[in-house]
Structure formats: C-alpha cells, structure tokens
Image (cartoon, rainbow, N blue to C red):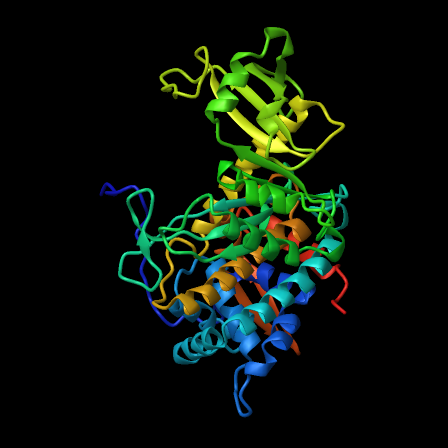
Length: 458
C-alpha cells in the first residue's frame, strides 16, 4: 500500500472552464452602485468630458476603476479583472482608455474634482435615507474625524517629499464620518499634500473641513449637530476660531498640546476636583481621572471653549514625558459642548481613535501608495479611492447585519467578494449560482435580497 505524501490533495489544473465567474461576490458592490444611483450620478457629472463618438462612458469607466480598487486592486491596470467578467461588470474600457480619462480629468483640475464630489454628496444623501436607522445621522448628529495619513512613495513623484517619520512620500489630510460602534465609517474629505506638509497647519484643516461639510446633507453643514473631531494637530488658534465662528456654530472636540501653562494649572488642581473617567460601557475606567481647567489658561481662545484634561496611570514600561505630572500621563482636549458630564465628553473624544481603523481600511483600499506621477493625476486617484471606500461602507450599512457590518475591507474581500460562482443562462435570464459549500454564501444571498428590496433611485 502506498502512503500519501503531503498534507493537501493534488489537483490537476486545466484551462478552458466555461461560465465560471471569479470575484462573483462583487455583485454586492454592483448592486449597491445600482440602488444608490451612483452610476447615473457619476455619469451625469462627467458628461462634459465625454467625447462625441466615445464608446465608453467616462462615469462608468471611473466607477470601474473604483470597483477594482474596492475589490483589492491598487493600480489602474487592475481594472482588467473586471474586464474579464463582462457578465457581472459589463463592458470595461481598455487600459489606454482608462489612462486617457485620468489624464483628461487631471487636466480639468478643480472643475472635474468639483463634479465628482458633487455627485458623491448627492448619492450620499440618498444612501443615508435608504439606511434609515442604520445611517450615521440616525441620532440627529454627525461626527467627522480628521486625521493625516502618510503615503510612502518608492520613486520620485511630483509632490513627494521627506516626511516627519523620515520616510518619503505624501501626507494627505482625510476626513471620515464615524458610523459609531455599530458600523464602520465613510470618507468625506481627502486633501493631497506633500510629505513635508505640517501636521498642525490650520489652513489645511480648514480646507479639509470644508470638503467634509460639502459632502454632508445640507442641514449638517452648519450648527451644533455636526461634531468636528481631531487630534492635537488641529489644536491651533486659527482652526478652533474658524470652527466656532459666528454663523457656523459647529461643535468641536479638538486635541490640545500640553503647554507649560496647562501643566502648571494641572499641578494646582485639588484631588477633589478630579472625576473618574468612564469606558464605553459606562463602567469606571481604572486609573484614569478627568477635570476641567478654567481661568487665564483660556485667554486668547474663542468664547465658550472648555479645556478638559485627563490623567491616567501609564502602561507598564511606558516612558513618561516632561509634561506629565506625578507619574501620570496627561492628555488634553478642547470642546464647546455644554450640558454633558466631562467624563462623557472625554469618552467621546477618546473614541476618535476609530479614525485609525478608517485609515487602516484606506491603506488596504488603494492608499498604500499613489502610483501615478503627477499631483493632478493622484488627486483624481484619491477621489477614486474615496468612491471605493464609500461603496465598502454603504454596502454593509444597507445589506449586512450583526458582526458582518463591522468587517473591514480585507475581510469583506476574503469572505464575500472572492466567492466563485457559475453563470447559468436559462430562457432570457442569467443566473449566478454561488458555491453551496462556501461558508458565507448565506451572507451574500441575504445581503443581495436586502439590496434588491430597496427602491430604485429617482
């Protein structure tokens, strides 16, 4: 008797399989595009750039690249995996056509960017209406997190420069709408900057906030229902003053640097003035306390600003900083929210860390590098990356439930999008049959059912 060698079965490979569809789970994204009306909105926005006898619609071509990025691609040529499956993704433009479109839109500059952004904002409002109680504004408020992202460049590209982390590349400033603990988040701003751009440049934070507000439904573009949240890079006089400007009235929760003046005020705070910090589940946070500073430490800042400090025992092995006090790690943030306990406000600001999850998802969805040479081209590519991230946020929000709605892009691709299928033509219908033994086929079919039950756009 022969003994089998190896742990895996030996399979014979042959080419020529018919009616087999790879990336069959991508129909979830295609159906999301259809129900959201993103295809018609982008096509209408890019109509001025369609040539008279063009075969391919510029909006469809741009969306194809975004779908390829959402499925895991990181360059324009990866649109080829959609081209290989016309039964699912329709006719897809050739690589030269895609490149020419990017060059055309890059040459149009701000005009093309404004058209794409306006279409995204229009569709976003429609998607939030479809999501109803699952939408990020279901509670009547919207939270926008701002954060910088370092994108490494492995060759000399326009706008690339040394970064503060001693790497080389770009330093875009991005904004994300937080979906809260029950969801993920979606991008609403991406400001491309050189690698040596300052982290605390107030003008860039103002521009990124303006881009983010323009993506929100009109009722959230001013007023206390919109919270702008960022780390200490946004803790500048100019940016905080802009947020609090009369007529804008935005809520903010902005990290602040522990200056010598703040440090001295903290040393004078009596023990009785400290309040225990809390966790998201309402329990007391062990070894952490918060207090509010008043007095001349607020001189020069906008009226109504509150300064809240947290002290916490550092993790074992953590090195204390010069601004820490009595063996406690100090952090500080400013807000203009009133009528809520300071421990609750500190927890709200601490949850800004979810923006790091959004950045990780962006890196896994086309933002690992910016492959094009010119800055104008990479600005168009940033919009494409945002469309891909929009789809990866909207599809779970509209179609997935439970823990599946929290899945990040890598897990969505591994479990849902990479599922294979067989295309069967019967009568006048085409049916995509998914593998019955695939563990997540039930998730895919249930999600498709939820999407098909949504009303058609318009």
